[in-house]
Amino acid sequence: MITNTKQNWTTGQIVKVGFMSLMVVQAVPTPGDFAPDAYILTNAANTKLYKFVPHNGLQSIDLSEANQMIAEASALAGRIAARAIAKAAA
Image 1: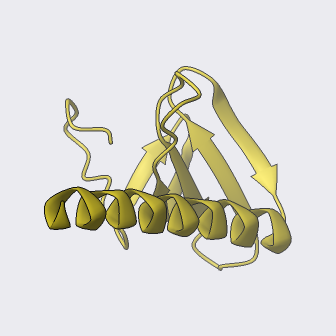
Image 2: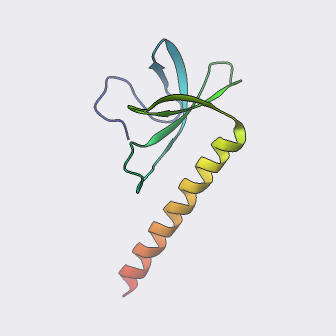
């Protein structure tokens, strides 16, 4: 997650990316790919979605790509939680 900045990158906050002011829809952790975490952003009118990865740039995406990113992050969180529960039970 982006922490070393003056902007607040939590869900619902407005951030500046280049010359654009966008709202953070969701932060998507990306462990294992050695890239920074991704962020799903939208414009003020909620008509366009973007994927932002620090140092890799801003990319326009559609709703299905955003849903896929969120589903993959949820599945990963579930696997991590299941491993932690199994380890704690052992």
